[in-house]
Length: 259
Image 1 (spheres, rainbow, N blue to C red):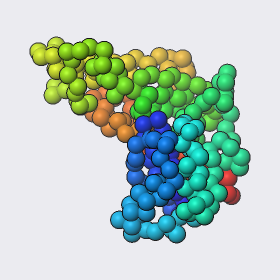
Image 2: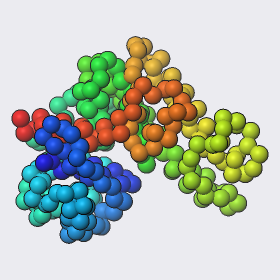
Image 3: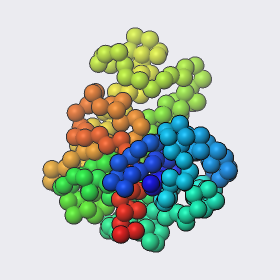
């Protein structure tokens, strides 16, 4: 099986992917570039056993990362414990194989290109991919599969952290939908919930409307990332939610590189 590793700014996702592209198991750990290959191995060994697998069941490893400092230890993990040379998303032979129609292609995050690959593979036409992570990214992929650029906005947790850290009397809240659709908060906590949650939805709806107007053709909106389901029933801008889009992109890239 393939071990696909998506190293983001906040979390690293490890996923076991079968030959047919099915995800058999997935695990998430906080991103820490100082974490060694040995630490990863102990953690993964135990989780693999809980799912009925062993280290020997992993025949290949592919890594996509937006945290360059994490790459070395993840590569050592692949070589030392899985006895394979990992593929690195964006590097030969695992080059993306799509056109990045932006001013600085080298600066586009691996996760965003992987999302574009997987989204275009699964859906026809023009696409807007919204990925909820440390930042919330909006990526535009045209009907030919060309990456056209997009938007980077602060993630909802980042927005809340900035608000709480800058205002001494505001409490720290869990990110959750308000109890109802009212936007006139009656308590400080209610007002914060409204501002963060409905304010974030208003931002998303406004940005998607502007993106669609600029694209000038019908565009399907695909949401991914851990917080996508939080907003699903409070807005109608999502056409589909693909929770594992980045992992699917890694699996597709591995398939192409080893074909």
